[in-house]
Length: 337
Image (cartoon, rainbow, N blue to C red; front, side, top):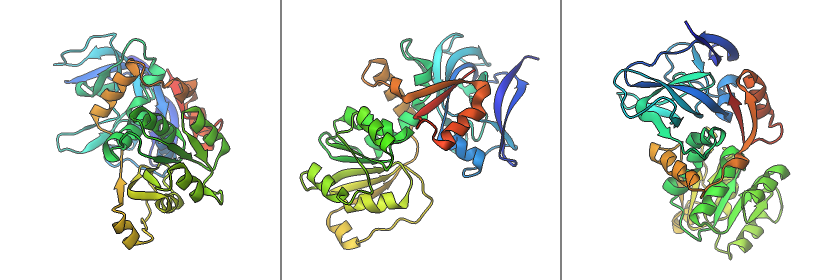
């Protein structure tokens, strides 16, 4: 039986091990993908350190990796419309027959491996000019903020937007806000390197949330009206509290980062008078991934700066360490089998 290398999380021990396992065979309605690139996300790190746990995993071991791109390698029974060699990315998850949303690399085996299985309806064609290293991050690092911007917040042209936390999601949010015409786009991060990155990604200004003149600066930038929409990509209570102080009339606060903490509104009368809203956000839908593939394929969105480094699959533990330690302030590290 053919074998392959895979990065396997042993959940009970919270241990990532690089193991040799059998190459999987596609079942009915499945396609086997030869993995060309797989992203390393902070949520992968949190699965390893115990901050997150699989909800629907059958068993105690899973191959990590929910950001995956590669080529079609083999077709299972009944599969139509796909051919070996086709370039594809994989949706980050799928719904089961009961309607539950299962996440690749969490609830079932993902793409930190030489080969991965995918249900045929979770494949998305990738244009020839889009590198796999960029394509693989679309289903989470890019689609999550895209859905937050276009669907949850429904940002309109010339709306003033603030982005708290310019990491893997927030940096893309800056790009995507520019794409839909938000203005000004204000990035907020305590780290100088993150603020520099925000400017490089196109933010009109990048502010330190600890500066005494923070509120005055936001009001000046928005003509005293405040923000139309504020995005919390940090998942920190202090971010939410600060964002509420600079939210304008009809302003929306979008919680894209998860703090697992109570949400406090300092003044219900001010909140109601200004008709403000707090909106929860999580992940994206299949159509958002398709939209982004179209945009990148036509050159409207450039993801080249998002790939901070490419490592061999065998170096997955090193990649996890670098993401955990924020070494080099990476947006995305990519594993290549």
